[in-house]
Length: 232
Image (cartoon, rainbow, N blue to C red; front, side, top):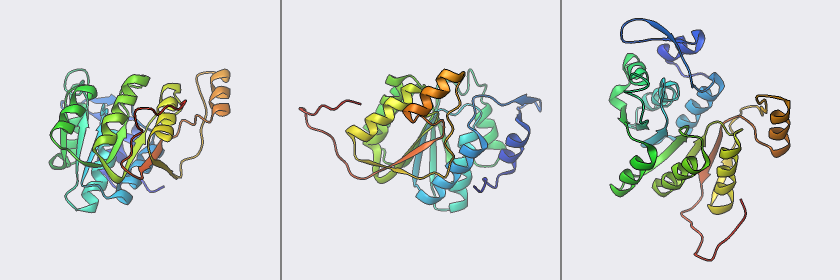
């Protein structure tokens, strides 16, 4: 897949390092892979969102992929990153990389937990066309991320999930399939089931828990009635 044409991002992915505000070279961490970067970049180009949201920013690798596509489209699209630790724990490294790439005019950071920020955005009437979930991977947090993003997502919009090999994210994806009207999109990413040991890898393969990112397109605004029940 074609990588994003972004010199800052290319340098980071090639070296595994980034330059901080003081000019010091530092290793990147908690970032998505080059393959996932290319898939995310392509997804934005295909979806052409006017407004996108990502949960989790860290070093800004996914942020740069999305913003590069939005800039290339030239249609006024914007990205909101929700990350409670960006300026404190992460020392603003993601924001610095966005600024180095000259993409800050298309970007907004909300430095709050997603379970606090998303209801506020929903209350303000925010509508989105694309979302990428890569925040807290615990089941309840990831499910809440999807729950609120689904309420803001326009029909035809897309939600992407990172770290789909995690059992918690697997359960969230089952919820998406059984409790909402979504269609899974083809990403072109290879199936990859490697875990921390043989048994984990085997379990992932048996359960179909590929580590590759997965994307789902919203087919309609639908919610079950109060009597609905289905195993996830």
